[in-house]
Amino acid sequence: MSHPKKLKNKMYLKELETMQVELVKLQEWIKQKGLKVVVLFEGRDAAGKGGVIKRITQRLNPRVCRVVALTTPTEREKTQWYFQRYAGHLPAAGEMVLFDRSWYNRAGVERVMKFCTEAEYREFLRSCPEFERMLLRSGVMLIKYWFSVSDEEQEKRFQARIKDPTKRWKLSPMDLASRSKWVEYSKAKDAMFAATDIKECPWYVVEADDKKRARLNCIHHLLSMIPHKDLTPKPIKLPPRQRDTGYVRPPRQKQTYVPSCY
Image (cartoon, rainbow, N blue to C red; front, side, top):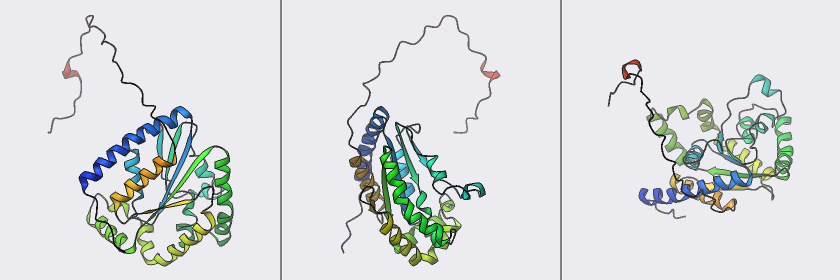
């Protein structure tokens, strides 16, 4: 299988800029039409989920589009209905929520690392499709992406993170443990797809060995999934500034300034 040449950075940035403008239009459409949008990002460690989420949200209003990346559940949360901690982050009308990993943790890391029982895992596979159908019936738009990366490319990205102090934090103990359980994760993913790749809410697989292509392909697909029109507000005309009627600014020496180091 021949692989396409990597995108030139100039072309990538041009396409990304065009799509980010369209994402702003989508944001306004979601807000004005009162849509409730949920997008799930799942996949192998270092598959590029965070990168595409960052590009999607880069130009958007965090009050309309927010990211949910939950940490390890607390002891109290472990006793709750499994979907409860995720349900609390679902959008209200006019909002879009991006889940950087989601309730599918149970079918992935929890399954492989034995953080849940066999009964809990089986119940998840049975109830998850019904939970998602319930969301759809309530008016939530649910879109699920799986970022697929080869073991060779994942290894390269792990090594790059080890060498870069600004990226080393991305390698959690779970990420390192996953290296020795590649086959188990593959089997868990296959079982998850078999149970949850439902007609009403299918999984969309993003080939992610090429980060730039993956980002553009995913954003392009997301835009196509939510038909929208351009509701961008018309250019704003600024009102005249208030006239100075004798205002005296306090002395500068009475204020504390950040040192001018540059």
